[in-house]
Length: 603
Image (cartoon, rainbow, N blue to C red; front, side, top):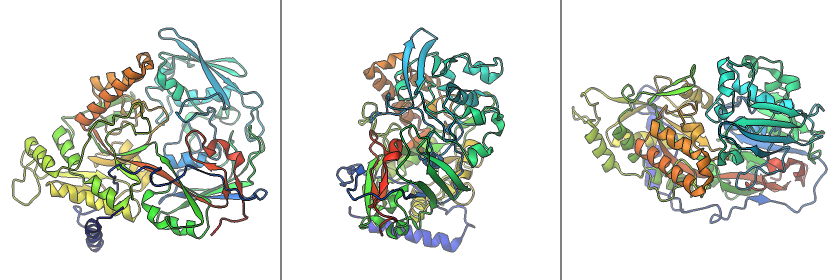
C-alpha cells in the first residue's frame, strides 16, 4: 500500500518537537490509534489461519511464546477475577474453561461441560449443565459440580470488586438478593447431583448459546479456594503463583510481571500434551520483530499490526491472521459509576463533555483514514459501529459512522457555542472562558506515540486545546485504574475492547455495567439493550433490528466513537506443527496436539 510520506514526515517532526520540549508544555503530548479504508482483508493479503508443518516432530520440547507488551502483566490467573486481555492470554495454556464453542461462537457438546434448556417458564427458566465424568484438576483432584458453583458465589458476593457482577449475572434468580446480603444462597444455582447443575434464570435469550444470560464458562477449584474469603482472593498464591488448572499445561513458575513457565498437565482430560512445556515472556514492542527474526520465539501473542512491516520479509515465520473480535474507541466521561449500588449515573449537565455537538465535532476532527493508510498496511479499518463485522448478522454495514470532516467539526463547535473569542486559534467555552480538554490514553510503541501526537494536532486544527491527563501517555494498568475510578482529571479517553463471543453490548453499555466507562445511559438505550437480550430476540430479524437501533443511538449520542477494527496477526515459527487460529478450530482448545520439528526455533 502506498504510504503518505508527507503525513509521516509531519508526525516525525512533531515527535522531534515534543522530545525537545519535554513535558513542560501540557498542550503538546502524544498517544495512539488509527484505522484504514477497510478494503483489504486477511484473504486479500494472503494470510492463512493455520499452519500444519509437515516436518518430522521431535519428542517433547518447550514452546517459546512472546507476549508483546510494554509493561508488566498483572498475573491474575482466575477467570472470575482477571480484567485484561494479557492475563487471558496467559490463561490460554492453563485454562479452566468448561465449554467449547464453534466457529459461530456457539457452545458445543465437545467441552468439559454441556448444557440444555430443560424448562421455560416466565421468571424461572432452567438450564441444566452436565460435566464429563473422569475430568481432573492438575493436582489430581476430581472436578466436582461444586467447582462450577463456586464462581457464582465469588462474583455474587458483596465483597467482590471485579467487573462481572453485571446485568447478565443479575439475570440469575436470587443473585441480587445474595449480593445485597438478604439471602444466604443464590437460589437459582442448584446442585442436582455430582455431575449436574441447574441454573434458574429470569430470562433466556439467544445470548445463552454464546455463553450469555448469566451462564459462566469456567470453573474454580473449590477444594483450594472454597474457604478463601472473596476479599482476599486476588492476592492469594493459588491465584497468583500456583493455580491448579483443567487445561493442557500447569503454571510451574511465575516471575511477576515478566514471564510464566508451564509444564505439561499429566491429568489433562484430552490426554497429556506432546510438548514438555511452554514459556511465555513479555517482549516490548520495540524488540518483538528482532526477537522473532533471531529465532527466540515460536509464537507471538498480542502482536501489534504496526510491527508487520518489520517482519513481513522473514523466512523463519508464517504469519497467520483472522478478523479480530475487537474495536478501539474514543470515550467521553459523562458521569460516574455508583459502585455501592452497581449503577451508572449519567450527568450530562455536570460533565465538561456533556454537549453532544462537542463530542461529534471531536469525532469528525480525527483523520483516522489517513493514519491507517500510513501506518497499518491495510491491517486495520475505520470502525463504523460497536459490533465488529465478524458478527455479520448484527453488524450494521450500512451505518456510515463518523468520517474525517474538519469543516463539519468546526460548524458543530460554532453551533454549540465554542468559539475563538480572543483570536488565538483556540476556542473558548460557551461562556467565553479558557477551555481545555484532558485526554487519557495508554502508552505504546513509537507508532502509537506518533499517532497520538497526530490526534492532538487534529483537534487543535479545529480549535480545541487537548492535553494529556498526566502530561504524558499512561501505563496500561494505571490507565484502566484511572478510567474505571472516574478520575476527575479525565474528560476523554482512547480505549479498546476485546468483544465477547456473545455480541450483546450490554456488558459495556448497560446501566449496571462497570465496563460502561463513558457512564452514559438513557431509558431508551437500556430498553433497546434489554430487547437485544430478550426472548423476542430468538427471532434473528428482530434482534438485528434492535442491534441496528442500538448502533444508531450510540452514533447519535456519541458517548463513545468507534475508531477502528483490526486483523489479529499471529507470527508462528516454522518449527511449530498444528497451530490454528480459526475460530472454529483454535489450537488453544487442542494444545495437546502441538509439536515441534527442531530443538530450538528456526532462525
